[in-house]
Image (cartoon, rainbow over all chains, first blue to last red; front, side, top):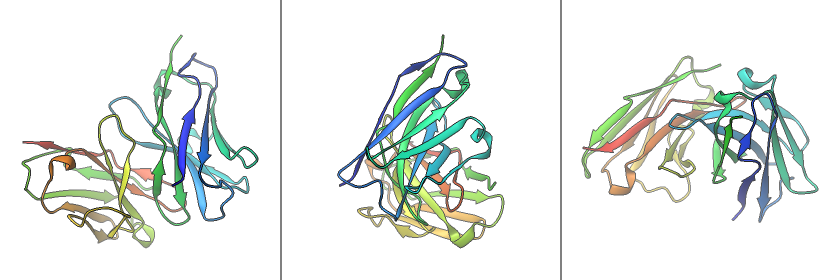
Length: 119
Length: 107
C-alpha cells in the first residue's frame, strides 16, 4: 500500500519561506493516473486545498495562494514538495500531502505535519 | 470558485441514531464530483464517499451519499461509537474546495 510522509521544519519565521516535502513510498510518483496535492488545516479549523501537481510538472493552485505557493515534483527522488513564501501567523497549520486519482477526490493522505509561523 | 456550505455545524446524536449531513454548493457541481471525508482528532481525513454516492474501498454500508446539482447529503444509518467525528464535503475536478465541516458529537 502506497504511503505518504511529510517532512520539514516545524517552525518558520514570519516573512520567510515554508518548505515541505512529501515522500512517496511503496509506489511511483510517476504514475500517469495520479495527481499529488497539498492541503492545510489551521488549528481547530477546516481543510483548505493549497494546490496539486502531476508527474509531468504541471501544477494548479487555489487562487488565494497562487502568488505564494509553488509545488514541484521530483520523480528521481519519488517525492513532491511545497514552498510557501512570505509566511505570516495565519499560515500556521497542519500541512497534509495527499494522492488523487484523476477525476477522483483525495483518497490517500499523509499523517500531516504542524508548521508554526512565529519569531 | 465553488463555495460549499455544510449544515448543521454540530449534530448531537446518540449511538444507534441516524445522522443526516448536508452540503450545499454555490453552483452546480460538474458530474456530481462531491466527496465526503471523515476526520477524527489528531488524524488525517479518510475518504468515505466519492461521486456523490459511491462508497470508497472498505467503507461500511451504513454510510451513504446522495444528491445532485447543488444539494448533497451524507447519511449514517445507525451511528456506531467510532462514527463520532468531523465530516467534510469536498468538490473536486479541476480545482478543489472543502466545506467547513459538520461535527457529529455524542448527545
